[in-house]
Length: 309
Image 1: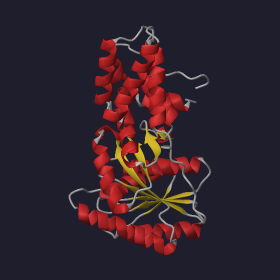
Image 2 (image 1 turned 180 degrees about the horizontal axis):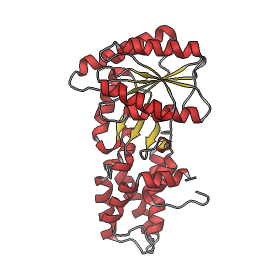
Image 3 (image 1 turned 30 degrees about the vertical axis):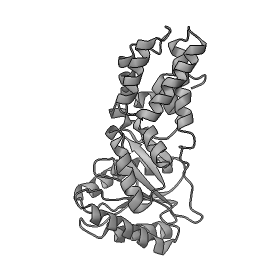
Image 4 (image 1 turned 90 degrees about the horizontal axis):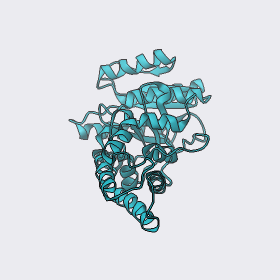
């Protein structure tokens, strides 16, 4: 079985490769120099680590180089990873259960962010951990979204509550939570719509889902997570800010990190909004939805090896 660090390293391969190509092997065994640091700065900006984090990484390496003129790339990599770990301190979300089941998780985000796929993978993961899960197909605006969720459910042997295309999403959410309660299920995962061209209507629709499920359990939804496409880089921050203002997010899921060289956006989103990152998408398979680990992320980006990892 692959270790968590190995999964992160494989999932962030494009980001790591982009940094490596620009720094010409900086993190190998040779001493660092001004040229390699300039390449690192360019690489970190290109990967969307942002001005603040890039500056902290470079200053950390330069400060060490002033003390040790023979500082080598491997040591610079360890310094960079440590700066990232500090920047991401407190960012790891830990999924808490409701006092009384079911625990309701609402997934929010624009079309194409990976919400529906994430809902199915998350349900599979929670079941692997011993829980019982029910999916709610509340993206009734798109028939394809309902079909996609049902297809995943068939593949992974999951339960789904759905209705016809165009049905009231809040009614589907209400039925799902009621069904989960009557069947003794531990979790409900609500897949919502994400169309941008009717943003005002979408926000009202999401608010109605919140109000309706709260009629069954005043504490529900217990988790409201924004699913963001990691390949959007820094643009994800604006997206997150808009949804957070309208709906009140409690955390993030960052998807498609395996398909982008801009994996540094995670740091900017955390630093800007302070929303914990619960899961990251590192591949196509259900098991590639992994709980976010700041240490594994930082070590993977800089190619740092840890004993036993």
